[in-house]
Amino acid sequence: MNQPLIEQRRIRLPDWVDPERREWLYKYEKLRKRRNCMIPLNIIQIFSALCGFVTYFMRKNRVSIFINVFAAILAVCGLFGASKLKWKLSLTHSIMTIGIIGAFLVYEVLYAMFGKKKQIDEYQIRETWLLLVLSLPYLIDFIIGIYGAIFTVNLIDTEKREENGPDNQDLVNEEQMNQELVQLNQNLNDAEELCCVCLANPRNSVFIPCGHQCTCLNCGRAYLQNRAQNDKICIICRRPVERVIQTFH
Image (cartoon, rainbow, N blue to C red; front, side, top):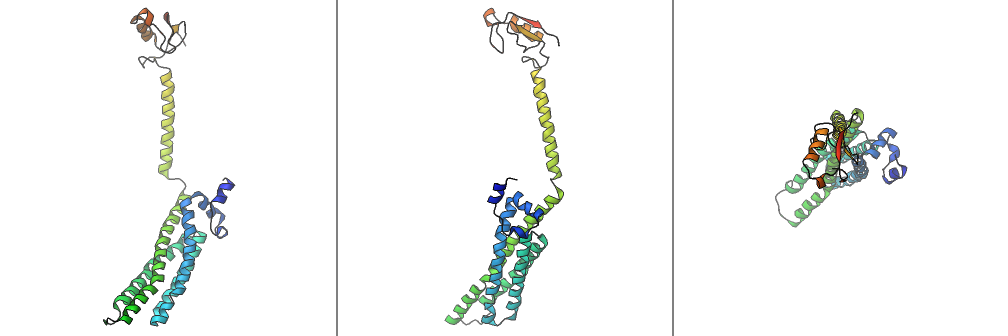
């Protein structure tokens, strides 16, 4: 592959990928772009999990500690999966992030909106909005999990394509196309040997004196017989024709 072209295709953490799988990033642009996006997103998810610990100090909820530690572990798992192009790690990251973190996000939003006593005062409104804002790290994790699922599907599809080689349907289509091209060339060659008038008989006559061979003997004679003297011209060069004679191969 052209080296300058390879250098233009920026790949994040290229040394983390096996040489064989690194070639996939050169061949499949969509996979390369999604991997380049997925790596910083996983790093963002790690910091997002650290920010999520603030909710513990707000509510003293031990579940939030577990969820944020779990989110950080998932982010590291996704980071290694994206960096090394390991679909099992990426799949684990995306499914667990969407499922568990997404469920906790719904819980946090419902708690912020309906978990307090129904006393409408300024302090409660401020606290509700604060809890909603503190739920943003889990929303970020959830969105990253969705993007990770898209990346994982792309990675699995690429791995299957590399293992199986070209699709059988592609091979069939290519073989059929080649046969059609051969047949088309054969038809063109045959057409060049047929009379340009009737397109049925072979060209077995020439016009005199130009010597062009473009009709069969019957069509050549009929052509000259049915035209006036001034109109007896060669079909190809438009020069006057005196007579037509048969040729033998």
